[in-house]
Structures are given as C-alpha cells and as structure tokens.
Image 1 (cartoon, rainbow, N blue to C red):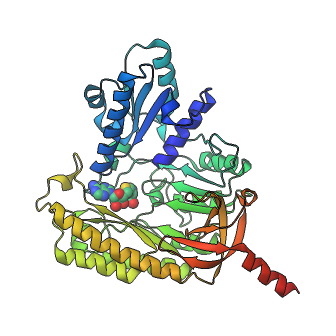
Image 2: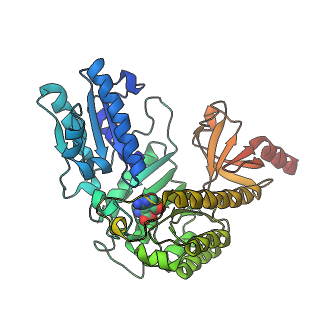
Image 3: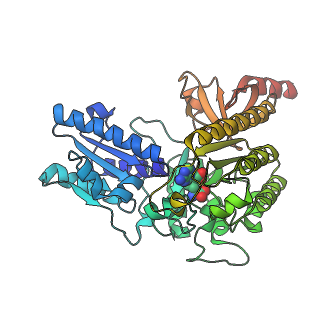
Length: 446
Ligand code: SAH
C-alpha cells in the first residue's frame, strides 16, 4: 500500500512538471513515505531523515525534506520539533496535497508545513500512476487502491489510528482507473485495501447474495484486455461463499491468496480481536483449495503477542504445518502507541520473541521449499514483469499462484504471458526455461 501511495505522489509531482531524480543525492526534494506497523520501521525512517538533515545542514541548504504516510500521521508536528530541518509532514489523507505544498515551500520559503487533518473523499485521491518510471519500459502490473482505513481494531494494530475509518471508492471510479491502466499496457491488477473483502459493505451493501467486493471483482473482470486480477489482504471475517465462488467463476482471478492468520491459538486470536477461530480459518483454506486446486496461500503471523505461552506458540507451529503456506511473513510483536495490546499484562521477553521468530521462520521456509520443489518439471504460465532484480541479464515473471520465476529472456518478453517449464527450484524462486516448452510443442506438431 505504501509503494502504491508513493507512486501516486510521484505521478502527481511529474504531472505538475517535476521530474524524478536518479538518486537522493541529486534530488531537490526528498520525501520519505513511512510505515508505523512496527517500531523498527519508524526508527529506520527517523534515522534516515536524521542523516539527510545532517547533510542538508552541511552541504545542501536548499533541499526540501518531507515525511509522508503513517508515521507522519501519528506523530505530526512532533516530528518538526524533533527534526528542525524538516520542511514537510503529510498525513495519510493528504498525499494528494503534497505537490501543492512542495511548490509553496520552494516558492515562498515561509516555514515548515504539517497537514495531518482528515479529509472527506480522500479515499478516491490515490489515483495517478507512474507505470513506466523514468524509463520508457512499460509496467505489466499495477496496484489499485479501492478503499482507505480500517474499522477492525485488532488490539495490536495502529492502522485504524493512522489510516482512519474505513471508506470505499465507488465501483465505476475503480473500474475507470483499471480501464485506463489496461489502455496503457497493464495486464494484471492487484486491488488494495486493509481488509479488501469489507469493501463497500456499509456504502453499497449486499445485492442478490453478493457482497460489494465480489460485485467489484465482477466489474473489474469485465475490463477488456485485462488478463489477471489479484487482491490483498482479505480477512476471514465476512469472507463469504460468494468470494469463494468468485475463484471458480472468474477466470482472470488468479489462484492466489494472501490470507493473514496472525496466530494458531484461539485464545490469542481472541485477545487480538481477530473475530475468527482456527477452525474457521482451516475451513476457509479448505474451501479455497477446493475451488482452485493450484491455490497459492501466503499469510502474516505475529509471534510474541502479550500472553502467548509456549503452548499457544506450538499451536501456531501446528497450524503452519497443517495449512502448509506457500510462504509467510513472520513478525515479532511490537507494542504500538494507543493500542490495547501495548498495555496488556504478560508482555513477552525479547529473547523469547527472537527464539520463536527463528523457530517459526525455519518451519515456514522448510515447507515453502518443499512446495516449490513440487513445481520442478511442471509447465506454468507467467506474466513477465521485467528484469530480474538480482541479475539484469535475466527476466522475471510470476505464476498465477504468485511464485516468482526467473528465466533467460529478453526485453521483448516484458508484459507477455508465457509458458515456462520449471527446471530448478530455490526456497523463494523458481527457474524456468521457455525453450523446453517450445521444443515440446514443436515435437507435438511434428
Ligand atoms: N490490514 C491487514 C494488515 C496490515 S499490517 C490485515 O488485517 O490483514 C501487515 C501485518 O503487519 C499484519 O498482518 C500483522 O501480521 C503485522 N503487524 C501489525 N501490527 C503489528 C504489531 N504491532 N507488531 C508486529 N506485527 C504487526
């Protein structure tokens, strides 16, 4: 979501006549978009800004420095007191005002600006796309923000505070954005929201047994030229049969789900205010796999939530072994300002959190590698996204189940759907060969 917000701000700046700098060292304006989900992310952003501020004082007095996003929202003016060289603090409902504020700072130089107010309608302002950055290469994939905020109030989570109440854009507005993206060469769209399946539930409600989110999926599915649809992240609460059925009925909807579970212990799930139990989570996973057998499922898990006993943790390990996730993001619990969990009794010692994190990660990685191994020898369809990050001589694409595949390809493959034979598997990456598939099909023809 932050990547998407940053891209929208960059695109808005480009539209106003600014251009993207090759690096922070040559930039006139440096904006750091921030995350508040864990303390580590905030500390990193502050550390980075301190370094930039020191550089500004010594060598670059004219450079404009700004914080955007969740930490900007939750700390506001306090950041200006802490870092006097800072020029701009832009909250999560004000991304679209960034260009205007920068112009004001550059032209008037009349002091720092901080805007973290709420704004009606701000959910529909993350709209512009950069797509091809500073080069001319086309993006095959894009993110689309369909809603802002969250009303779930998980006891560990700062997001309802930093992103405000749940607000949804309209279906026609979202579909229009998707259509424009496809016109510009995009072939895969990922719909974004804190809890996507809660999309429009208050504004647009249920019609003919279908939630607003499923109706949105159907409307986006109609966009001609769009090949693939994904969304992230859903929540087990309100995950109905209509959404399971969408995986059967909508061929563009990729068989992949990022489905945060957070814990394998019902006791901890209750303390987290997640409003589902392990049984319900298992049942949803079963239904998803029944709907689409090749379903790739990833998750988020927090270890060391206050009160988590060894037995609770074992239950999480057990859940991971039973579900067999394709991958999982394992987070160390981090107490957040004004959240109920931060003041709960039985906070867990750092050492215990570290150990549980390492144990769980070991288990997750072992299973991920085993699942990847099963891809060896299979032919998969990938959408080619661009050069491999590690080796720019190679190209990278993703399977419908969201596995990264590296292969010997050329720039002309970018944006294409290709069949690849998987010849080798790492823990996180698959390696494919298009030649083998072509060889086979020409043999068949012969
Ligand atoms: N709205 C999304 C979550 C967004 S935050 C959802 O409910 O699925 C992404 C992940 O960060 C969460 O799923 C959770 O695993 C992790 N997270 C959130 N708050 C955290 C905290 N206080 N400490 C550690 N991890 C946290």
